[in-house]
Image (cartoon, rainbow, N blue to C red; front, top):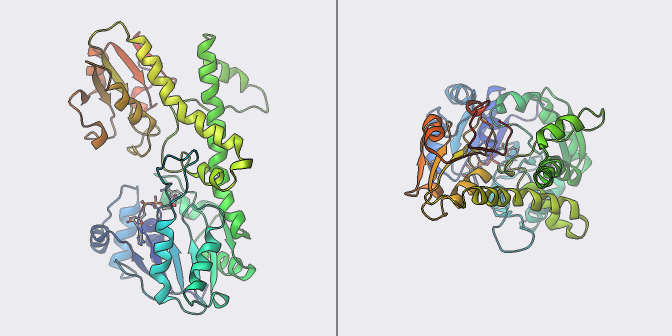
Length: 402
Ligand SMILES: NC(=O)c1ccc[n+]([C@@H]2O[C@H](COP(=O)([O-])OP(=O)(O)OC[C@H]3O[C@@H](n4cnc5c(N)ncnc54)[C@H](O)[C@@H]3O)[C@@H](O)[C@H]2O)c1
């Protein structure tokens, strides 16, 4: 797209930095913005402040070529991309509510730099109507929104494969007007090899939320089955294997809960805006959130006659073979088990070097698998890391089918 030469990316985290570096490597002049001065300084040295394969090379090349610069303040550009966090409020409400403070503050920060013809793209996973709220906020602040193009383009990359998936994945683009959709889609087509699919802003927002809710609901079904099977002493893994032989059945894998910053968060965005119509999605969230409590109760039952129980917790990450502990049910379970009087917890997590703050307690030790297997009264398998697959011990409580 010849008319676009400069891009300003707001938020240089797991999504914004790879996007900024990719755009710079595709010839755009990119101004990256983050409120974290430390991140800005590291990026300007051509280095990275987050862990993601291949990203270091992309950032180094982008900075060295002079095409990527980071700053704490935005500047004028042809395209603005907003990639800031969209968590939910940890309040006591029945349904957690989305926290759009970061999106709105990022939007406010670009107001002085917007000029006619600009394309403004929200990439953050957002509740339905957020793109329109951005337009409303700009209008209220004397930006003539009939002369700019505002769209949503949700991000669906898998951490660990971001640099590849940013290019290869199909993208959904939805503008607040047809012209915005067209202009935004043309921009993505300049660096995306996957299909660029056009819709409106609300449908684009909903598509991302629906993708993650689909996963959550299906995992909840598997987790619920695992608890029902326990009651009847049926091996859930064998059951699922058999049921999946049906040509139109594909039951997912149960675990110790659902974690991470996407699947455990995004379904709430649907529930909070349509509480009367989202019973299934809400119930799935509750089922998945109940699984860690179930695991804890099973372990407590098992060790009830042991005076000074030594419990091994295998895995802390929110899914196999990564170091990401955000919203991880395994961390929550480990923390709760450490509150059992006189317990010693042996946490085995091959992907980290030190325990997170939450688990910094006298009776929790980060240890090797061998020591845990040898010394503990009970071995609780929480994450199916490759290092744990196939281990044998009559002390194992296996919640992940090792
Ligand atoms: N990480 C993923 O795998 C992934 C995948 C798909 C979608 N998403 C979505 O993308 C969005 C961003 O996620 P992320 O993982 O990149 O988050 P992140 O926390 O890694 O990065 C966000 C960055 O934005 C910065 N920031 C916050 N407010 C700002 C502001 N007003 N101005 C400038 N910078 C600001 C933060 O300092 C941080 O560096 C979220 O909505 C998330 O749900 C993430």
